[in-house]
Amino acid sequence: MRHVLEASSLVPSGFVVEGVSNDFGGPVLSVRAASKTSRCPGCGGASARIHSRYQRRLTDLPIANKPVRIVVLARRFHCDAVLCGRRIFAERFDEKVLAPWARRTTRLDQIVLCLGLALGGRPAASFARRLLLPVSNDTLLRVVRRRGSARFVPPTVIGIDDWAWRRNQRYGTIICDLERRKTIALLPDREPATAEAWLSRQQQISSVARDRGGGYALAAAKALPDATQVADRWHLMENASRAFLDAVRKSMRQIRSAIGAATINPELLTAAERLQYDGYLRREEENAAILRLSEEHVPIKEIVRRTGHSRGLVRKILRGQRSDIFRVRESSLELYLPWLDTQWMAGQRNGSELWRRLKSQGFRGCLRVVSEWAGRRRRAEKVDAEALARAPSARTIARLMTIGRDHLSKSETVTIAAIERGAPLLVEAHEIVAAFQAIIRKKSLADLDPWLERARRSLVASFANGVIKDRAAVAAAITSQWSNGQTEGQITKLKLVKRQMYGRGKIDLLQARVIGFQLA
Ligand SMILES: [Zn+2]
Image (cartoon, rainbow, N blue to C red; front, side, top):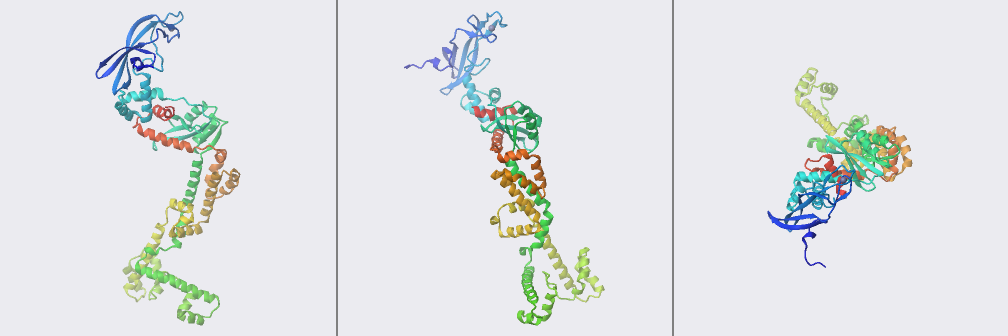
């Protein structure tokens, strides 16, 4: 057991301490190699014939809160091997300890590398300063670049996808080993040719999970013709939902008329109109009751007796003359209503002007009657317009139709019910999309072909045709255990790293950090 701390135990192995001094607040250790010989880098032969000596100044790990410098008394050797081109070579050390030309010991470099990989350039540099590791931002990045590029185990199942360098501007490609759950490569663009070049060097790959955007499918087919392609399940589900949304968009005309015809929103009416509207609903009930009696061949006299309405009113109802929502005053105006309506539709909407023209036709009522009529007409149109404007967006309708009835509010239920009555093809499209998603979820490949048959003749036919074109990969998506889902997760990680790099994210750096992460 040693009781004395020897200076040599502080320096990297293979070195002997010659002397210790203090300078600018930190220790300076003078060392030399323990070995008497060194191997020539040209021929590999050992030589002990010293030519000259020189000094190498290194930085090492700090000790006791002080930076440590090491001065290596290095030697130059003659190489005496007859066939070696070198006559003189500089002393080489174990690379695990000190690399040729290095200004830092390998153990310091390792820590610098780990910091750079974990934190990126600038944050790592400032953290390194606190740890008394004297490295600049640039040095850090250089170390990461030089040493971070990782080797990977040749993959057999990969996921490939694109990711945004800058949103909507520049894209790269990420490749993950799905079995080992690791990112193994970043490619600088998303060109099929780039992906193809990478893939063709990895002939052992047997499965490629990719999205449905054609480019990677093509690259994989060319580079790895025997590999199974797996369409990404997440994208398939997403595409199916989008197809339904498109179907809703195509049906918006029917939807609007279904909603507009089915509802007058009482909240949009004025108080007076609401009274009228309530009265209208009540009248509708009375009308229905009277019509029912009539259908049962109850005589008019008996109907009058049972309902308490006048004989004239009962007659009117039976003739279908009482069904307007906003009661028209049974007035002098009635005779002129067809003419007024024509004028109104032609754009003549000024009450006084209408009244003047009516008068010239022999109308004897006062101006108020006509202007009240015009006011009612205007409000009714406004209500219609608002009912149309209230038709929810296609996206909302798609969502409401997709979530269960139990989760809808009462008014949403009414709206959806009206839409479903008015647009039966849309109901079918919804069933078809749900069936597709069930096939993916339940992995029921046998249902795929019957589904395609049905879907091709529906509102989501173009989605179905897309599936037919990519049928093998979709079938693989249903049966295969592999999916690009985890690639999405790796992209999230990648984006995080990219943000930490403050725009210095050149591809090699990013690659070193994302992939080097897993080595460190
Ligand atoms: Zn040699």
